[in-house]
Image (tube, rainbow, N blue to C red; front, side):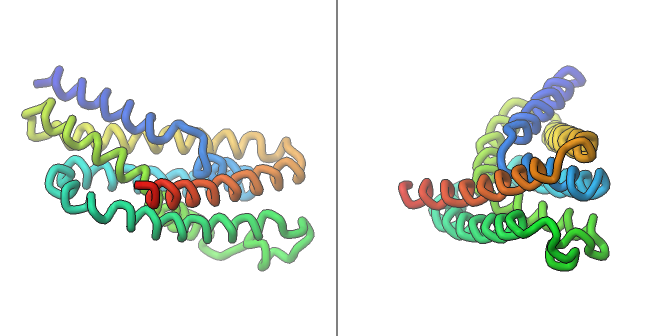
Length: 213
């Protein structure tokens, strides 16, 4: 039994890393958040991403077998709607990244009361809209439920996946905060533009893939 749970914990940790490690739009945004606004905001962004990974993994493992067939006909529509929203978010981020460096703080969003909580909510929303995350964890659900008979098995898998995601995203935030003071505003600006373009591309790919399907 213990060996079974340890295996599931390792599998969950690897699954969490697999979904977190590719340095895409979300990773770039975490880096920039931490570089521009500091470690506290970067960790808030990391926690937002990890929260969604944890919730999606829990839902997939707990209800994936029952939910997947019902969701399958709606996945293309969900992907299109999510893609449109993601493109809109990316366009807003790009507009902010292209603003002059001497723009007032209330226009650039550099100083906003309750910033960490708002950053957390923004990254929760952005990550939750990514259809690839849903599909990935739904694919894992069947595997988890068939390789263990232990009641605690799915819980161990989900917690391990969430911890792996949090560890990786927090690592990005720490790296961003460490190098933020050492890079020029031009590099930070370029990173912001790159992250915004990556978000727009993420949404566009979701739309194209859904329509092709």
